[in-house]
Image (cartoon, rainbow, N blue to C red; front, side, top):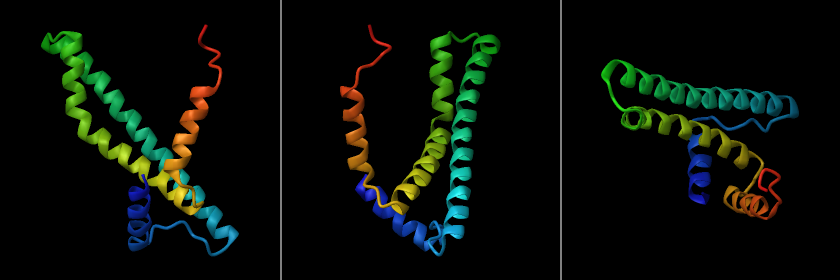
Length: 124
């Protein structure tokens, strides 16, 4: 994760895509704009999953595929596009982490440990 954070720090600098740090007003506008872009990318992930489900149904209904085979084929067809959209999401998340100087790798493992140790109210 550290390599990704360092890569994106430099990449965003080269592309002039850094979150503004000139003033509160500019930073706020830049953060909100990037948040909007992140949510757009998340919705594009959802669109890809919707396409997988629709294609699965089409394969079953129109092509006579079994459900499992249809789903497997539909996932394979959309795998590359979902990878691209997930990568866009990661880029924006890392941009926020870099702006706030958060070590995402450390933060990730701490959060996973916190989840592991907490009482899950859904389990009985």
